[in-house]
Amino acid sequence: MAKKQEMQNVTNEMSLSSRFTAKVLQEFGSSSGELQITDYQRSLIQGYFIGIDRALNTAEEERVRKNANNKDHTYDNTVPYTWANVNLPELSRDVVHYARLGLDMMQPNHISPIPYLNKKTQLYDITLMIGYAGIQYVAENYALVKPKAVTIELVHSTDTFTPLMKSRTNPVESYEFVITNPFNRGDIVGGFGYIEYDDASRNKLVIMPMSAILKRKPQYASANFWGGTKTEWKNGKKQEVEVDGWLEEMCRKTLIREVYSSKHIPLDPRKVDVSYQYMKQQEERLQETANEIRQEINVTANRIPLEEAEMESLEALQAASQKPEEDLTELFETPEEVPAEKATPQPSDGPQF
Image (cartoon, rainbow, N blue to C red; front, side, top):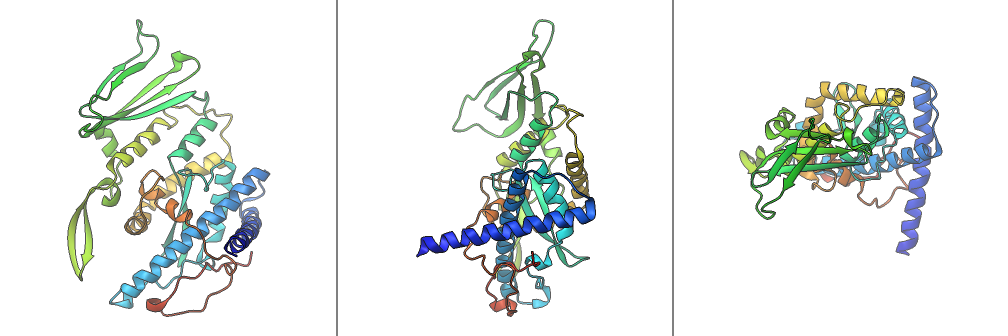
């Protein structure tokens, strides 16, 4: 019986994802014109629906819980995380372009959804954040010369690292790296990436001292990720607490972003297409709205355990997007309204795809 129900849920999920795909392509075509979409890219779009829907359900559970715990319901979030409250035209543009890049929401660390409330529209904008595996995938696909291997390592105070730079007597850039005490490596002092090509003369060593890594730390970085002091409310009182965070994972993520940038793995201008350009424009837009998004991320960091999605703020909802869904049959039906403090999370309702 349970297996039959599970198969029914999968069938419903796939049916809804197909309808979502059709709606997304319709929305995209009406605002941006037609783009060629392959069958594989259609399947990626269906995966986006599954990941986003599960993220919405997880966020809705938290909204209900927080509202119920609020002593002063003036501060309740009264906008349910449902498909009806999603900015679908903007999401459609993101989904189509990122699917054309080959980014797969069902793969760990490729791309993750972050829903946050746009105060002007009172709709949820779904920010699609590219993880470190996605960065690697795009960089290699658009590279002038695809590397045959890339090594990423953080260097700790007890390690021994010696760069061997290219010179007349050393035609191939390289390094020597020894972990002398694997069980107590000390503090992180920096990191490096080594990009290898079939033509070894192209090999490149990228070095980042800790000061360079910390320069890239967001201004409003969550202590849940980078460690440090954060504010918590306990028994109705505000207090400062120290948290360890995930400093090593955040440093590694920062190093990966640097090594896989076009500065070190040059782009092939012949491969740059409209979807790649769109991705870059979205990166710039995210910088402009970073503060607003980061507020939502900090909330997310308090409710979702960090996992394989590079332990970073913009990947935290990857765990949510992989949470099993109990029932999707009523996904696009409007649930009955219930008081926030007694509400039970419902499957996301939404546009009639």
